[in-house]
Length: 263
Image (cartoon, rainbow, N blue to C red):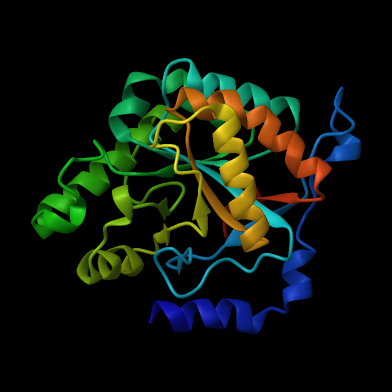
């Protein structure tokens, strides 16, 4: 069902049309940083898709040298703000998959993400050590829903019914068919990744930069996963964004369909 829905999305719209989505903050328009990579366009993602080739058969329809930046597990003291600073300086927009308890503890960072044009998405309430796939179904759904409500309360001051941004990423990418069907039925899109920085492993910022750039060169395009809780990532991100510009990559910002970038 999901694959057919995704096929209808990309089948009913030509790839050139998708690639001509609204442009925002290109390098030439980035105040004080004319060499910045910027954000080349906004992609509206329809409800209920499942994308990211590390987990699913399909991914978002990106052109060669297009990348979507995603960050998990925040917001976190120090590191999230440093990453936001680097993104703002280079006019780049990203998607943050929040842990509900972290959003509840630091709503000012969530509101900053919204104010600076980023997409605030969801990553469960507590990122449980026991993955959602190993939990009883009702408990897993409750963990997901509590996280979404906490994120929305931090971001917008209220939470009722469906999440404002219907984007979810499973902790550890550990889903089940029943949980995927539940989210699909509610119009919530699930995101894996096409490659990642492996920043859960300790390494220097220089080592991480070399690793993620190598993976990007091999993939050519895709959704990349970072963690905004990691000091090595926060230190590496400015050099990574500058390398994207130097190597001719373009950043795409994803938002829910129908929002036009307004969340």
